[in-house]
Structure formats: structure tokens, C-alpha cells
Image 1: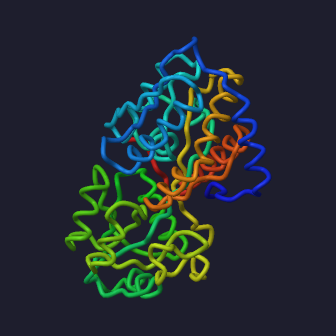
Image 2: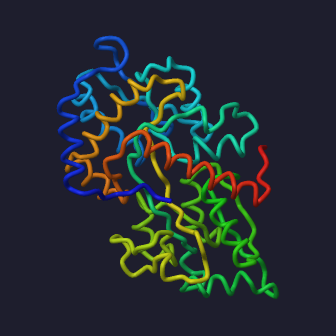
Image 3: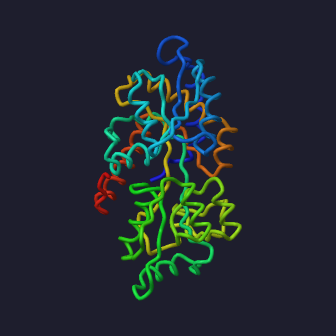
Length: 328
């Protein structure tokens, strides 16, 4: 389930009025707010948060800094958040991989998804099912038929690692259609993208951001399906999930949230939510997100963000159980 990306104009205006009226700060007066990005500098998540930073700083009327704490599939950054005081002055930008899937797949991770609280949904990124450019499967049905043909050698699919959303999505597809494929887990997105574009692995799902669109347009990758219910403006010729009847409940997107420790006081969460919704209503910020391939969320309050986050938790835990995912 992806975050809603539209709301009525009246609801947005009311939220902006509330945001304008609220100038409360979090923590002690003039205390610095740290926004943790659990990814390296220069990536799409980092760019999004650095565009958010000046808007959030103005909305809170206090200094906000972005701190990149990457490594161990984002879990180091999550650990830094959970070790900080739960007063609203340390925030985390994260999605299902870091908050939900890492505790299910990595034995060294000691936190659980419920240790985090979603303050505001920021946006969602679509996924696209791709093959290497010369595989010869031009449609989703052709790929599925090839994967069902046990008389031919098994194809390989890549992912960002065991327990990543790219791993679970393909395993879901395999279970639904009784497909045969060999999993090749990588230690991150970069190497996987390089290898599939170079023809060293056969297929997989990738986030529809960064250089993925360029690789598809160049022919190094072939896009078969966008895992959402509508076609992508970036790839208007690629079918959407709604056009593929073979799959059900396959609308995989990466929801991104601003999160705090679960023990953060409700008053601080509300203050942050008002400020973050001011940022979400900024036209330039929304245009930046759309230009990078993401969908900015509609104005949303903490109960809504928590409901979406819980839906993510339930979905990925159910799927992890179905494929017998064990921490390693």
C-alpha cells in the first residue's frame, strides 16, 4: 500500500493555516534538530532530505542538520536514532528496508519495527520489474512463461540482499505463479544495477529513480512492469500492475517516513508533524520529489502515518513468514 498522494484543496489549506499558527519548537529552546539519513551522501534519499532541511528549519524556527549514517543496510542509522533522547530533536528518514525488513533478516539487529514511530509519510517510490537488455523476454507474460519452463536452465534474479524488498517482491511473484529462479543477493543497489545492466544477472525489481530510467531508455535494461496501479510518466509505454492479470496484491512501492523513537512525547510528535506538513505543501519540494521519480505524500497527521506504517509492517512480516525468511 502506497502513501496517498492527493488530498482536497481545502484540507491542504487548513493544514497550512495550522502550520502557520504553530511555531512551537521541539526539545530545549533553540536546540539543534538532527535529521539522520541512513544512506551515503549523494543518493536520492540524501538529496530529498537536503531539500527538506531548509524548509523544516524554517517551519520549526530552529537549526536542523542532516547527518548521513550509512552502513549495515541502514541499521547503524536506526541504532543512532534509538540511542538518542526521545524528545523529538533526533529524526530518521527511513523506509521498510531499514525499519521492518532488517530486523527480520539480520541476526545482529536488536531493534524491532515497533521501536520506531512514524511521524509523517514523506512519499513513495515505485518499483519496476526489469530484465537484462538481451534476455529476450519482451513482456511480463513472456518472462513468466520462461520461468515456468523447467526444461530450460534456471534464470537468476538479483536483489539488494537477503530480506530486502527486492528479494521479497520476486519471491512473492514466484509463489503466486509457481516460477523457478535462482536468487543472487548483492550487498547493495549499485553493484546489482551494474551487473544486471552488464548482463551478469537476468532480472529483478529496481526503484524507479536515479539512473534506472536512463538504463532502460538506453536498452541496457528492459522494463516489463511498473509495480503500481497506474503507468509511470517516466516510462509511459511500460504496463502497470492493473494491466497484468496474473498477479494479485503486487503493488510494491517504497514508502518513506520521518520517524522518531516510540517513546517520543505526543506533543513533540504533533509539533514535528505540523512542521513537516508545511514542508510537504511546498510546491518546489513537491516538484523536486516528482522530478526524482518519487511521489510526495499528501498532508498527513501522525495517526495516518502510523496506520500506513503498521500496514507495511503487517505486509512484510506476512511475506517474510511465507518465504521462511530467517535472520542470518
